[in-house]
Length: 138
Ligand code: ATP
Ligand code: MG
Image (cartoon, rainbow, N blue to C red; front, side):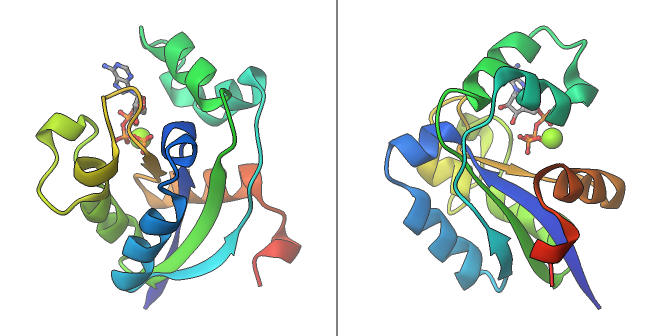
């Protein structure tokens, strides 16, 4: 049964011109792009999105980075979409990411790591609703 997940092409990857290459890798891996848009978010909006990390030492750095330039939030669909996107993304730290993963190819550091992907069904539901209205998700 197909499942939906939420992803963001982060500001570092957009700045470097990797958007199309990352979308190509996502489509090649069998995901349907249900919806996507280009936008910028404020630091407060990034804080709301990453609220589960509020107590972490890198929270300020993370939310400033996520609001530093345009991003592409999107909803993706496929069998096992949540787990499969995490595999395609690779480890949080690109230095530890497997060959062929998006972070290995396009990310430069643990802070600026090119792509976000939901880590569970509940977080996917929250994150999709944070960025998209129901009418955008048909
Ligand atoms: P994401 O949630 O963005 O998909 P992830 O699930 O692989 O990434 P998390 O542990 O959820 O990793 O951390 C969220 C984000 O916070 C990371 O993607 C990274 O950009 C940033 N981050 C995590 N650990 C660090 C760190 N030690 N230093 C700086 N930034 C970090
Ligand atoms: Mg995460």
